[in-house]
Length: 468
Ligand SMILES: Nc1ncnc2c1ncn2[C@@H]1O[C@H](COP(=O)(O)OP(=O)(O)OP(=O)(O)O)[C@@H](O)[C@H]1O
Ligand SMILES: [Mg+2]
Image: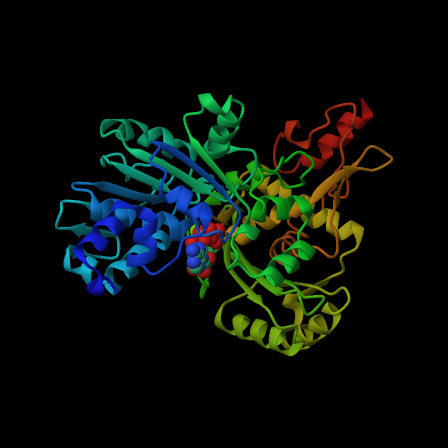
């Protein structure tokens, strides 16, 4: 397209990031994207619902800056290289597909692009402490999915941002009222708009007309209102009342990819949890958890099966069990799950354990799961944001006896956490009074403030307080 443009047309296109996105990259920006593209404030915060075009718009902004201005150092940072590469891959594609931009490119690799005007765009994973970024200085820094970047990273890179008077853009879908990203938002919003240091954008998913209305409707049905508000309405959700608060979940997160575990070392055990879909809209989930010889556990592999065919699900589990040594398979045998359980039991025998989702079992499995998390005995993968977000659909409430009970709406789509939790049914050991996940109301209104002595005394503590 650029080939047919006159010099004066090109000049006006290069003068504006949004025209550049439209005419050079062939994507017509939406009104809120134009605003973001044309914003040269030094500090920008984008709080967005999913799929509003954050990654797309920020990649166009980065490319315009590098291509049009001389000697720009642009860093794209996310918690993992995989996430940082999502933005970078957009840029890589624009550069490869546009002959004019391509002609001015000196180096094009999957993590770095250099232009003949001295500008460079790099993508970097933040890691846990930002150690990989510390040496870089930059004229522009884009943090994508900032809510998942550890606080230490922002602190570590702060000095580098000052050096060249960088423009810094923090973008993310919210993940709880916690962490650096939320703190900036809360601080800025508490000020008079005239005294804010940041431009703040808060954009709901429905503002992107390209985003499927049907999908959004379905998500509304299958998610709790708090979950929907957070993921699609760009709202930070309070974690009080959540059985698995964001802070608890986030503290279990580590940087690793899922890997299908083909073999286990001595002393290790592999558990599989299966949550069977109830309706055509639902998915069945298979979660594999490895237990290490020191008793710690890690989610190792996850698979979801969209179709509700029981035969396919059973076939898949049998296949998985052939390629790795599984210690136990826990299957939800409530309702439709009964058929799955019967078929698995007759093929795989004693390693298959059917679990009815009775109140007793639910409190045991979710309670044990939470106990592992409280005690940092479980690792979750940072890149599985679907699972991380699903934890927020479990709320807790006090029953008439003052016990805190987990509340789960059967219509809510939380297959991944259910498939994970079921593996924890027996995890506390038989001597633990796991039925009592409650606590004395007189002690504290918040489960988080509860002291933990060790992993086995979590529930027993509740009894101690009750007897005082
Ligand atoms: N101006 C636009 N024109 C056409 N399509 C667009 C536009 N803006 C966004 N989209 C489309 O919307 C989808 C979401 O874009 P993108 O991945 O950049 O969003 P995101 O906010 O980063 O999403 P996520 O929250 O999943 O990370 C993509 O399919 C993208 O092509
Ligand atoms: Mg994105």
